[in-house]
Image (cartoon, rainbow, N blue to C red; front, top):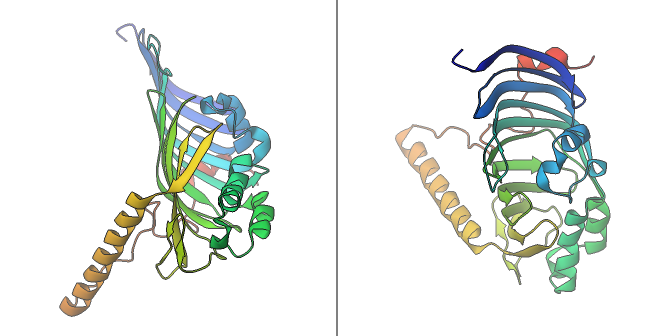
Amino acid sequence: QGGALEIESLDAEGMGGRVEATGRVNGRAARFDGVLMDGDLAKVLEGTSGLGQQTLLPRHVRGRVWAEGTVSHVFDRQGTAPWDADVRVRMEQLELIGFELLQEIPEVLESERKYRLIADAQDLRRRLKRVRFEPVDAQVELERGVITLAPVEVRSDAMDVGVEGWYRMEGPMDFTLDFALRDLKSGEGEFGPMEEDGLGHRFFLAIGGTLEDPEFGYDRRAHQEHRREERQGAWDRLRGAITGDPVPPEENASGSRDAGTSTIPRRWRRATRA
């Protein structure tokens, strides 16, 4: 149609799972809308060349992944990655094994004499060598070589952490981690204050630099924004109690009511192995 190739149905095995998609290809670009069902996360990293990075490798991850969204390729794009994507992702049975970037968090705290923030730096370092996660739901966007992660809450046996930020493929990154580490000490840390929010002491860590050479620091802006949101939430709850109009349950950072218990959409289950 008009020099374009219409793909009405694509059904194939790939990346350790099953891919279903529709698409359109013309002389300028290709666009696909589809789902990946019950894929292998390590094979997804292999199949996408690590999304332009060599820090998080297939040997570091285990887990199953489901994804749904749009992927496009611009044939004549110069200077940046030709791929764009906007994808909703769910990961289950997720593990990070021997991921060096995680190991750097307690090392930085300890080397900079910030180790008093945590009750046992050696125990934290041991637990970060192999981290098992509860199911994770996330929205990921790739546009002109920049990968953006919408705010998401990640729960694991080592720490519960909120994550958001962006990463330029083969370039800089800017992420904020706010976590309620179960063995954080209370009080004022040298990186900044740790705030009690009912879930434990929250600490805001900025990660910049590159994946190969990360830089850590206290994220004051994120901390202040969190304080504003907490005050507004308290006021809304008080107003609701007075007016008799209760505020709906607070959504978590991923935008769902409970990321740990959300279910895989029914259509994603078709290819799930018994």
